[in-house]
Image (cartoon, rainbow, N blue to C red; front, side, top):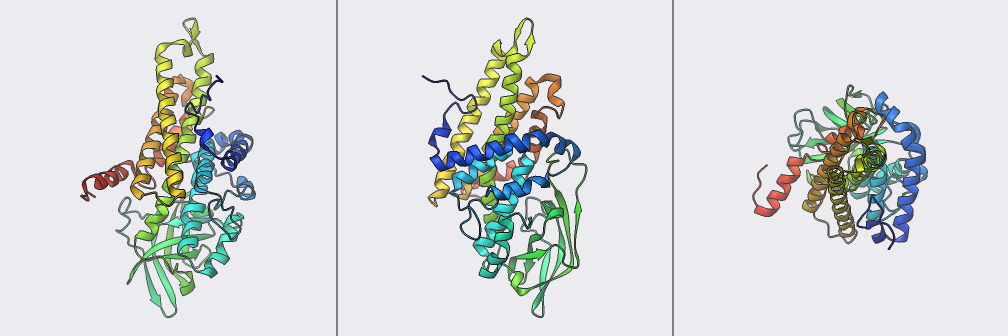
Length: 387
């Protein structure tokens, strides 16, 4: 029998079809050749690598699972392995893809007009425009329905006022999808970021997702035409459906972050000698590594199962919550365990584990905190809303 892949003991790769495997190999090569050499410096300098955006677009990774309008039209599992490989590089890069694809292009495709699709989707797919998703507000957090940003009709136009916070891509975006209260309920508006009254402030001094742009958005009587409103989006169901798309990608991406940490710790354990032998030869280290491999394998299987259900149109939001909760918790636990195995060297940015560990603290929080997803599952089990 052939040796097993140390990062894939359950051979989940064999369950991918030929096209999915090709996508994974292509993105993995991009990550190894163009992301890994620079990402530690980007993290240390708190810089998003904008120079990678043209290549992300050339590879068809922006809006990869969207059909038409210059998008690649890949299946959902292919999008999943894209997220997994990108987050193996860094959570900030996968966050960029998640926002562009799931939180901006998906709602335009699903709820937008034909004119909005024709205007924005090709530019977003080609990386000629960057988008952001304005839902979270300073006082709202896990309660997005408690929204203060509002939009009021003014003749044939709308006037938007309010603020958003913790917005990925906010300060580099060309278009912001702003969710605002109206007399009819929550609506989504495509706001060009050079509009008068629209301003951003990049959040500094982060200790997580440092290779990602995170911003506050301010709207002071921003005027947009009727044509800027997404005609098919009314109520909180629309933005929450976008979050479900993003959470699906996160369930895959977290596996990649765990794999990066595990590969580094395993290589270290095989060469690090203490008391006359490599630490990989000790029972305590082998037990730790085996437990991490078990967790990663089950998380990979879960992500693939969710992907196949999504492709069949059978994926329930509660299942997405379960996947995001399980896989991000797994990745954070693996990252922490690997950081410990690396000893003192594990606290430096020259190694991967501390960077992924810090990033995953944010991934555990955004797109629904771990507690939110636990309560989603709890509601499904009991039929009682405990929010």
